[in-house]
Image 1 (cartoon, helix red, strand yellow):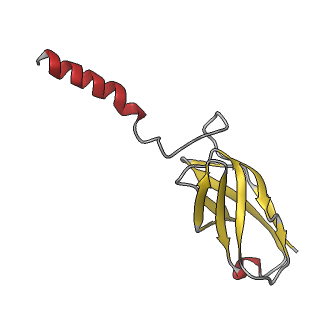
Image 2 (cartoon, helix red, strand yellow):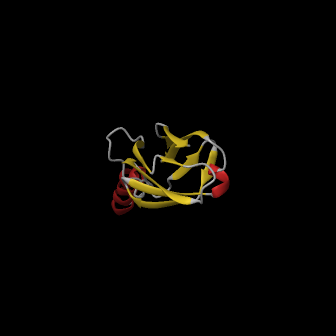
Length: 116
């Protein structure tokens, strides 16, 4: 193996492990997404669908918001904010729903959304 080939192989070996993480901007230091706020945090039962804004840290472009156990259409805004479409059927009945974000292979903490 020539010296040039050896240098190229070494360079690729050192660079390759860093590839694949460019879309994940983990802001809270431990690689875990974290929710700090839901906006709105409640709504009347039987209302119209709406966009739920989730604020926190550690969100990546692969973020998926879960409404209970069901994934929702999610829009990545920034590493600290994503939005999800909540349908009228989701809020038809009074109760509480756990909301969390899955990003970078990890789940965030859950926050409670109240349907009044």
